[in-house]
Image (cartoon, rainbow, N blue to C red; front, side, top):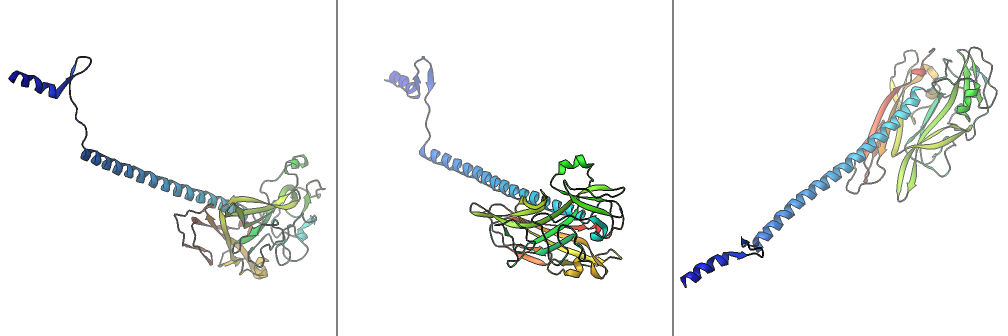
Length: 347
C-alpha cells in the first residue's frame, strides 16, 4: 500500500503527454479572477475611449477655429487691399471727375449706382465723384445699388461698400489688352486722361500710360445649402463690360465699416463714424473734411452648427453690438486702413 501511495501522488500532479514527456498540470482562472480582470480591462478601455473622444473633439474644434481664422483673415486681406488702392488713378493725381477727362463712356451693363448723386461706375458731370461709398443694409432696402443678383437675400445689418480705382500695374500696348478683354481702361498723364472700353478707341493723350479701370462692390448674402443657411461674402466687379457678382468666400456673416473723418489740411482723423451716420457732405468731402481711414470689421461664422456648443457671445462691430444665441462658432476680425490716396496731390 505504501508503494502504491508513493506512485499515485506523482500521477496526481503530473501526466504523460503523447510524446512521452511529463508536464505539470495547469490550473484555470477562478470566477473572481475573471471578474477582476474584466473590470480592469473595462476601466482601461474606458480610459482609452475617453482620451480618443477628447482628442477627436479637440481636433474638430481646432479645425473649426482654423477654418474661421483662414476665412476671416482672407476677407480682411481682400478688403484691405482694395481700400489701400481706392482713389488711385495711375499717373493722374488729385480729384478725379469729368473736368479732368476728355472721354467718359456709357455706363456698364447692370451698373451699381449708390445713393445721393454722382455715385455710378464712371464720373458724371454733376457734383463730386464718389470713389468710396457705403451703406448698412436694411430690410427696407436690401439692394441699395440696384445691381445685386436676383434671388439673393442680402444680410440685413451688414454693410455694402463700393470702391473705385485702377489696378496698380499699367497694361501694355493695345495688343496686350486682349488678356483683359471685357474691361474698361483709363489712359492718363499727370494732367488729363480718358476712359474707354475694350475694343473702343483710346483717347489721344500725350506721354500717357494705360491702366485697367475697376469698380468693386462688397456685401454679404445668405445662401441656402440643404437645411442650412450659409453667409457668403460677395464681390461685384466689371467683367464683359457689365457689373457681375461672384462669391469670394463662405462663412462671412457680417462686414461693417467705420469711416475716419478729419480735416484735409492736417490729414489727421478726429472721429470714426458708421455708414448710417455719414451724410452727403462727408461723402463729398465738403467743408474741408475727408475720409482719411476706414476701420474694417469682419465676423466669420462656422459653415455648420455644432450641437455640442452653445454660443451666447456678443460681438462688438464698431458702434453696433451683435448678440447671438445659437450653435455656431464665430471669430471677430478688425483692421484699420489708412487711405493714402485720400490726400495725395502727387505720386
